[in-house]
Image 1: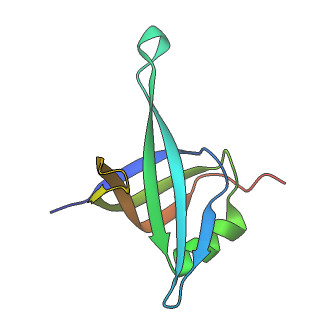
Image 2: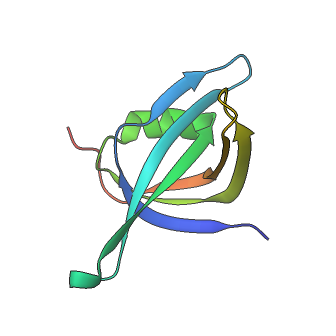
Length: 103
């Protein structure tokens, strides 16, 4: 099983890309853990597709608090300089809005 649920705030507006097959959205979710001097913020790269992108683009903006459910996906690649990279993204299957969009 590969499932993750996280609440957090968008670090900026969702980036929307249109491909031949579907609409793709990318965003980063900031998630705070701990309290006081032990507080830490994690930043999760997220990707979503289709209707989720359209709804997020309409109802969220930078700073919006949301809950996401999805799967972790590893992406290994080599750039044009020969450097190897390993990224982990959350592929979002569900999103719940925890507050209204700010005007």
